[in-house]
Structure formats: C-alpha cells, structure tokens
Length: 167
Image 1 (cartoon, rainbow, N blue to C red):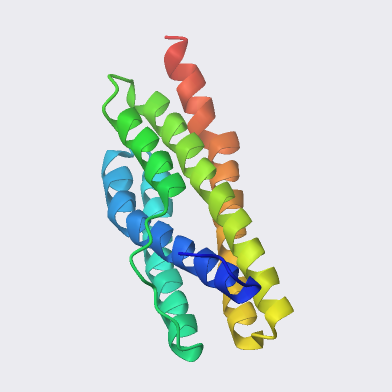
Image 2 (cartoon, rainbow, N blue to C red; image 1 turned 120 degrees about the vertical axis):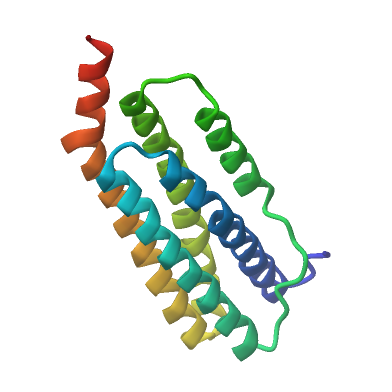
C-alpha cells in the first residue's frame, strides 16, 4: 500500500487494528485456558468478547466509510502474540505463568491503546465523527482492560507468584 494521503494513512491504521484484533480473537482463548487464576481466566474471556465487539466496530467503520479491511497483517501483534505463546510453553509454576501472562497481555493492551488513540485522532482530523466515536469506545475499553489487569496483578496474581517462588 502506498501512503499517498492522510486518508490512506488512516486506512492503514484501521487495517492494522483490524488484523491485530482478529489475531487476538484466536490468541485469547489459549491464554484463558492456561490461566490458573479464576479471575485472570474470566478477564481473558471477558476481553475475548470485547475483542469480538472491537472487530464489529471496525467492520462498521469500514462499511460506513466504504473502505476495505484488506489483507494487511499486523506484524507487531503477531510478534506480541508469538512472545505470549512462547511463555505458555514454559515450564513454570501456575502462579508464575499467570504473572507472565498478565505482562504479555498488558504489552498487547498498550499497543492497542496507542493504535486506537492514533486512529481516533486521525478520524477526528478527517471529519469522520462517527468513526472517531466508535474508535473512542474501543480505546476506553482497552484502557479499562489494562487497568483491570494491573489490579489483578497487584492484588492477587503477582502476590501469589511471589509467594509461590518463595516456597
């Protein structure tokens, strides 16, 4: 894709986010299955449902703007997911693995927060008000998920991981 205009850059951002979300729809169930903490498992399952909604919102934006999701592959998300997958293969105590998965999940969330913030700003600048509102909704959910993961880490998961490593 040639980035000949700001509109083309906006489309590229949307396609990147779409690819990232589609990859997450596949990755999140694997993380939920490996989580030993019930709260963490539920957080991953809840985020999976949100992620499906994020894909739906992006589909709506593509439809409203008469754009195509194309075949773009988000290489950054692919790398983040690959790192997370490598963690799942480690021989680790369950609580240690949960703490590692939270770290991996927060890397993903931070990437998404950056992407959605950028896309929302581009949409606003281009006068795509409805798209900007949909992107903001997703951005807000990504921030909420990041905060939930932080709370889980601080209140239970990391504490259990530290206690498990001291045994």
